[in-house]
Length: 388
Ligand SMILES: *[C@@H]1O[C@H](CO)[C@@H](O)[C@H](O)[C@H]1NC(C)=O
Ligand SMILES: *[C@@H]1O[C@H](CO)[C@@H](O)[C@H](O)[C@H]1NC(C)=O
Ligand SMILES: *[C@@H]1O[C@H](CO)[C@@H](O)[C@H](O)[C@H]1NC(C)=O
Ligand SMILES: *[C@@H]1O[C@H](CO)[C@@H](O)[C@H](O)[C@H]1NC(C)=O
Ligand SMILES: *[C@@H]1O[C@H](CO)[C@@H](O)[C@H](O)[C@H]1NC(C)=O
Image (cartoon, rainbow, N blue to C red; front, side):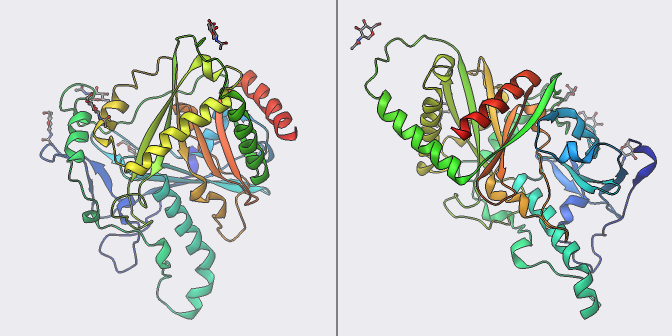
């Protein structure tokens, strides 16, 4: 694919112009001036975001199909986000056209500015405007307005921080990579060789079957002799939780930025790989989520140290989660129906599971990346497991 000659930079708005500019922070640059205690978004006279238009002769059906595919193949569909130590673009877009087949939209963003909920909401707002562009222009000369449920909410004062978490996180962050390091570079993580990407759908009835299976198994294992547990390694599972509705004083769903909390669930490898592995996982995850009732920010004073100390407790593997079925990514409609497939590309570098809604609107879709052999084995077991 030849991208070089097809890169176009469009001016999508200017601060202070009278066009509505709902997502204006995306046009700025992230910087961290020496005299500022935290990073800021700075606006220049003509702010732009980068939109790349590319044409691809890759196999559309392969890339948008159901079978596991080579993890890095999809990287051609992603824009590069310009990031240096002292300045970073916030978001970049790439539209790739597959002549006679379809198109894809790639989005790369700097997580310091926005989370998955906000970037999904940006894409949906863009889709809304595209869907309606022909309709409203004829009615009036003015620009199309976004409905209220899409309008980003910017008031930072709704976030109460009585425990001074901001100060704690900033101080922990500044200890990274030397002292007082204000670099905006993101982690340089590589995709392991031979990585394959798989997406698996669990319908509502599959989930029901799984739940019944777990309950049945839980009853069966209650009385078993558990003293034979081998002391061994820890697998840590990290769960991301959207805090917008869970704060003591809930904030609007349209809050622009990052509003994510977390919980960790830890399993011993012997239990995970034992006969009742699934049950054990369900139990530790339930226990972790149970603690949300004590407040989503309980333990938050330790989140930055947990993250930055590389989860020292995880001596085998750390498994993260990304996305959420609640983002309803498959409802994104630019005027030509639902997307055929939505992938969270970055899970290949961070080794996370991605969760989303299903195209059919029934159940959840789970994405993960693994080596080819493991992916094929899993795919075949998954089909058998679901059919049984
Ligand atoms: C910020 O501080 C660094 C190191 O202390 C220095 O090299 C750099 O020139 C300073 N930048 C500005 C814009 O003052
Ligand atoms: C990215 O940064 C480089 C170096 O600062 C610059 O030459 C290039 O034009 C930038 N690309 C975009 C898309 O802004
Ligand atoms: C600051 O951290 C970045 C990575 O986050 C690293 O590349 C850079 O070398 C560090 N700078 C200094 C002066 O240590
Ligand atoms: C449980 O396992 C231990 C160690 O293998 C054994 O000594 C004990 O008798 C077992 N108890 C029961 C109730 O089976
Ligand atoms: C946070 O870490 C400190 C020091 O390691 C510990 O004493 C404290 O119990 C932790 N707080 C929570 C809520 O886990």
